[in-house]
Each structure stands twice: as structure tokens, then as C-alpha cells.
Image (cartoon, rainbow, N blue to C red; front, top):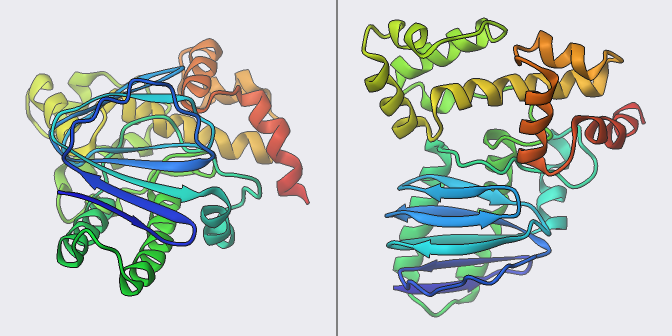
Length: 277
């Protein structure tokens, strides 16, 4: 089934067609990509991505990217930039366009939203109606809020583990331990020991259920902790990076630029004035 539904400021595409789209795109909207089934391969100018079942990512406006392959089913939402930023202005300290990190993620709340909307589309059929337009406009506002609350971006100061508590309580225990001592140079053995299982079993379980590897999750948490310090202190970037657990400022700068496309110093310079004003 292929369904293409449009509301005033957004578009939703759900399709099982494996159409090749190898050309580079540069869209003026946020693009939410969700893998309902199978795998999806994408490429940006900075990263290569492989999304497996129930994983998602967000491309920011004008992020150059291209689709390499879709194994089974693609679920895509295009969100107008002004619409998303207006919907989330009340809960974000960033006053210009939000930047989401270029990384794959999983989140039970986002998964539930997709499944609910997908079921509605199956009920509605391929031909849109006024009722489906109203439904989608409200649903897209919900998605915008969910993305700001749960998806890593320049507005993020913490990684919320609450959505995983009912489905992955053991892994939440590990994530909270990492958050409590994020400056520590954790080894995979130390993380796995918290659950009393082997490190390879733990690494596979964590990646399968959370969407990123344990070490990548820890690095992402360290990075979002730095963002608040960049905006609200005058500490040097080197001091911030080392105090938040990065092995060097070079590693920190490299990760920051790979995720956002700009450096920590640019982020600080571009956003500190907004906070002060």
C-alpha cells in the first residue's frame, strides 16, 4: 500500500514501493524517517545511516541527503520548518530553527505515534478527505512536540529515559548509572556487569532496544550535557569537553560537527545571545 496525505503545512508518505532515489536532495523542511519494516539506507554529506525496524531519524531543513535503499516499508513525514518551530517554541530555549542530531534513534512514544497514524491511514484509504486533513494537522503537532521532547538536538540538555521504563527497565537502570557517572571512562565490561551478563550480549541487547550502541549513547549524553554549559557559562570549550567525559577536545569537536554540521564554538556564538535576550 502507498498512501500520500497532505495537511496545510505537512506531508505524510507511507509506502512499500522500493523506488530508487539516489539523487541528492536539499529540502526546506524537517524530514522524519521511520522504518516500519526491514531496513532503510540513507546518506548525508557527513554520515551514512542504516535504520532497522522501529528506528527513526530526522533530517533538518537543507540537510543534503539521499536514499540508498529501502528493504520493505518507508514512513516519511515532512514538517514545515515554521510549523515545527511554532509548535515547540513554548518548550524550547532555542529561538531560531531547531537542529536535530544526525543519528538513528528509537523511542517507544514515537513508535506508538507512528503505529497509531499508520492504522488510521489504513482505515482512511488512499484518498484523503477533510477529516483526514484535520486528523493529520493535530497529529503533526503531536509529532512535533514528541520530537522536541525525545529526539536529540541543539535544544537538548538531558536524555529522557522515562519512555523506556515500562518496556526496558533493566536497560534504564544502566542508562541511569551512566548518567550518574558520565565523566567516568566506562568500559563495556563495566556496563554489562550492571546487568550481570556478558559484554557482547549486553551490547547487542542495548543496540537492539535503544537504537544506538551503549558507548554511542553515553557519548550522546555527554554531548547534550555540554550544550547547556556552552550556552550558560563562559568556560572554555576544552574545559567543558574534558569535564563532561570526552577523552579530548578533538574527539568532542568531531562528534559535535558530525551530528550537527557546525562546531561547538559556532553553536555557542549563534545561540548565547538568544538565551540572554
